[in-house]
Image (tube, rainbow, N blue to C red):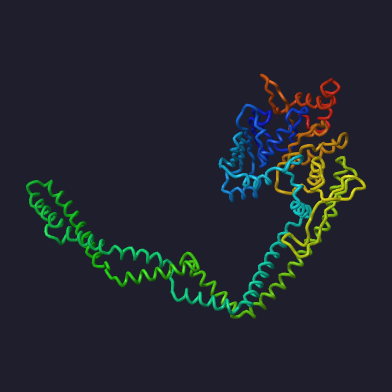
Length: 556
């Protein structure tokens, strides 16, 4: 849900900060007041094209920022986690358009590219009108809408699992057939590879141990000199540290009878002496273990060279080399017993195709039945939305072979007027028609997709009277489950809004700016009266406005 919208220096909007609510939000105002500018700003925020001319005159950049409540959208939260953009139940999107062309996008405070923003926004908002975020113009959305209406998401998911299983078996069989055609050549190659890797008798982590051993062998002289020298200095040599400390310790012990304070110092020195003697013994033992064997060093070098050669040929690590060896064993087993393996896969493929056919037929049957019902329901809704002669069809076109979504493609067709042939809706429907078709679909398929915010622009194009009242009522009902923002010129539509905002244009110090004001009580009545009577607002139009609000049960 769109909670907050902040616009700065965008067209004639100097600064605008508005909080939107759940339900049906109505935006009204005189022509030219800036209603379309607000829609354009949201469109920019959703990934629309950034143009320098949208920046307010006299400023260097325009900013559009919005806060969305995404707590109820598990799919959107999962997508945010995958992108590393998670931030609880809120989503903050900010877009900055600069005159120097350095446009920036931030999602939850992190800079993101435009492509990443466009991956998210189809899950946030659908705009229906003269903008590019029109879900109905994406043909790939039609079949999922039908499936949602038919309630066959379970069947569709089961079909996809069968399809993937069948494709996996087909791929295995295809690889096997290819292997048979080149069987001997591949057998020879794989056998050689296996023999080369197996002969090395690799052990996990062996290369790391050898690298460490090589380092010790390369510096054996220095290590020996340091450890033997340390042993002599501390213990074995003439005038060694331990010898001198021992002498001092004896002297202190003899003098402690004269001054007892020296006893504690003598004991401390004895402790230090024991520690140094222990270190000296460890240095002696370490020196005895150091190897100066040139032959061992050469063996280590040869072994590392062998492992490096295998890594270069087959896998970057010893662990992956061992895994590759297991894969070689499996493939060689298949190649050496190819007839049995082929027969096994062919049986699996027959069973998978039968399962896919059964699940595909069930899915198609439900789709065909649902397509007829959906067409009838949408046409009934359109008749109440000033499109009495519209014909809406859900065309299911059989595919030559099964695809991941079923045995058919689905697309919505429309004939807006009597006597016209139905054509692909995504290509011929106008903005106003798309808005009303979406209303009809939303009334027929309340949970058509995961988007929880709809924006309708020009939904009232070409209608009035009872049809306008029907549009308002239908949008109001949508607002019971979804957040809806609607720009309208019709009081019959505006009267049904749960929340009413007036877009107005003010002039100050020779500059024009757009403001968005929430309306309550008599302010809303006055705006409704303006919409009914134009510039001349009379008591009669005020009464009419109050009557409209009362009849629609939306009076404050």
